[in-house]
Image (cartoon, rainbow, N blue to C red):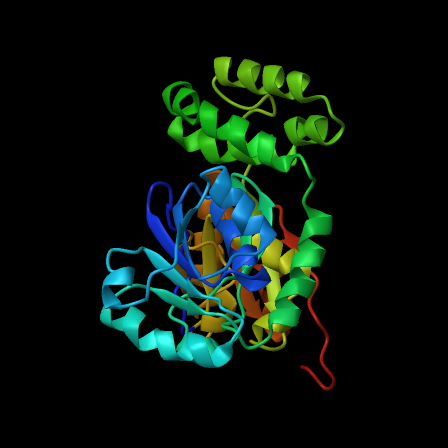
Length: 321
């Protein structure tokens, strides 16, 4: 991973776009959603940018560019439409110590513009480090189909309610509460346009100190694998890893652990007997537990368990034992 993925607050920060044509306008459209102060450097502007300048939504500058032009900028886009001009300006931006994106020249970029799915405040960004932008757009299309158009309003409602949840819902029940909000009745009501009912249902649950489904029971998911290649994990296995509070794994499972929640507890345990005791303890405490193990050891592990569990399907490989 050569680029660190991060969302930056851009409101009231200075961003410079060099260029006055369609390429520059595309960047400005995106930046205007962030509340940044946008300055467009170009001798001439396309109609769209001229209108934005006329309504004082962006600033126009056309003086000769120098290192001083870029000093203090949070981000700079070189988007003149001419690769040679953009490349020639790159050293000036570097001297000014500003982050720079050079359109269609990933080897000169310190910041990349990802493909974006906007359900503000829910935003999904897909980056390929400039290596496969078409693939990024294909993934964007698929995610657009998965996320409901109005999902952002539910996220915004949830954000406004977080202080009340922190005050009234016990800490040990909050994860279950939010899981119910986004996977249970409230989200289903939002999907069908019944937003007011969803808000009232969530408010009632907060007043009752938790989701109406009560205390969530622990869940043990056995996730067998015949290969430690992460792209061979089934969708259900990935979902369980993303939901897990605890992950039991073997040494060498690093690629699979990348699919798990970052804040999940992880225990490396090669001994099946001790692993089974550990998972049963955590399930009894109400945790969602994933036990990663080689498929050939699945039957022996099941025989050691005395708690309810599910076996997540895995990908069968030819000649796998």
